[in-house]
Length: 247
Image (tube, rainbow, N blue to C red; front, side):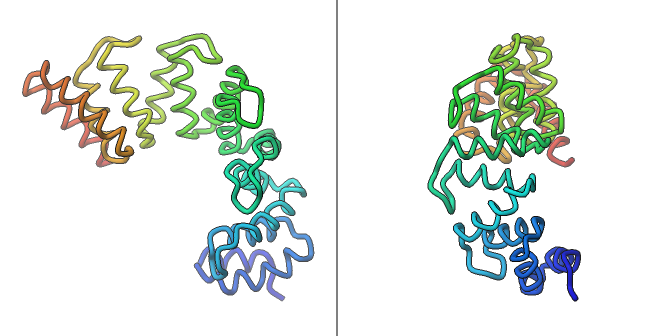
């Protein structure tokens, strides 16, 4: 008789038909892991047609049993209104349950909700607390956001050195927001010694994966920097950027 392990192995091998057929009866009999996996298959449209309402149904059943990944997904779905009527307070409730279990994505999203005042009363200290917990687990988005909060003194005591440390961690993971932020910090000497080469390097790197607005801003900054840099400095910055991109 096929079991959950067989279903997960089939899923890993992209055999979604087999995974679905094994997961369905397991989920119907209350297996939380099967319910979460089945919910994700409906969410992603794997073997079955994409069905956000069915996804929400199975994920919530798993979440109600304490399944941390399901709790995070249910919180996300309530936050953006996928498969359920959008309800920021309900979203924050489920994200909190997952965050309290140490789920980094949930901690990051809950921190963002506190920062924006969505579903909860705006509270920069709570935002910083959850962001830091996620950042300490290596979550690049949280590292970037917490770094900016340190730079601006939002929810924490302003600390430029700590800001740079967190932004570097995120930038090295490929976070374009952190990369462009470091470009500004080094370009304007905010809490660090002004360094046009480092600024140009990080702006250049950010253009690889940044969105259109970030790329245009980075190009404008690089053009301004190049007006005051020597050809050797520009070449060095471009070389450093290539080295980062190759890793």
